[in-house]
Amino acid sequence: MRQSLSEQLGGEGTRKRRVRRLPAAVLWTGTAASVLALFATIIDQAGNQSLYGYTEAAYASHGVTPDPGLVYAILYAVAVTIIVLWGLMFLSSRARGWWAPVLSAVPAVVTGTIALLLLTATEYGERVFSPVWGILVLLPAVLGVIATISLVRDARR
Image 1: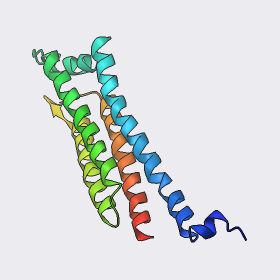
Image 2 (image 1 turned 120 degrees about the horizontal axis):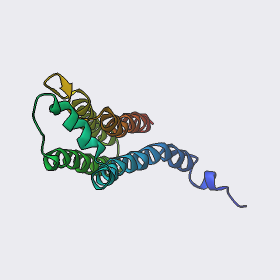
Image 3 (image 1 turned 90 degrees about the vertical axis):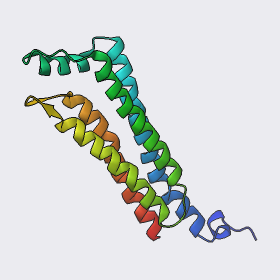
Image 4 (image 1 turned 135 degrees about the horizontal axis):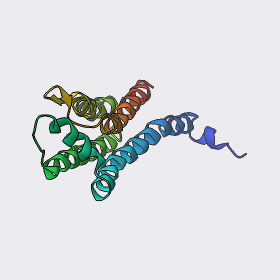
C-alpha cells in the first residue's frame, strides 16, 4: 500500500518546511530592501542629487558648504554595511537551534541603530540627512525584527 508524503516524512517534515518559508521570505525581502538603498543612492547621485541638496540646505544658513563626495561616501558606506549585515543574517538563518535568532538579532539591531542615527543626526540644529533616506534604511531594520521573531518561533518548535 502506498503512503502519503506526509506519512513518509513523519508529518513533521512538511510542517518544518512550511514554517521556514516566512523567515526566508522576510530575509529575501530585507536583502532586496538593503540593495534598494544602495541603488537609490546611485540613482540620486547620478540624477538630481536631492540627498546632497537636503544636506547642503541644512548647512547653507551657516555659510558652510559640505563636500558632496563626503555626503555620498557616508550614504554608500551605510548602504554597503547594511547589505553585508543582511548577508550575515541570511547565512545565520541556516543555523540550527537557538543560534539562528541570536545571530540574526545582531544585524537587525545594528541596522536599526544606523537608521536611527541617520534620522536623528543634527548639526547647527538642522537634520543632516533627508528623512526619506532614514526611512529607507529603517525598512530593512523592521524586516530584520520580523525575521528574528519568526526565527525565534521556529527555534521553539
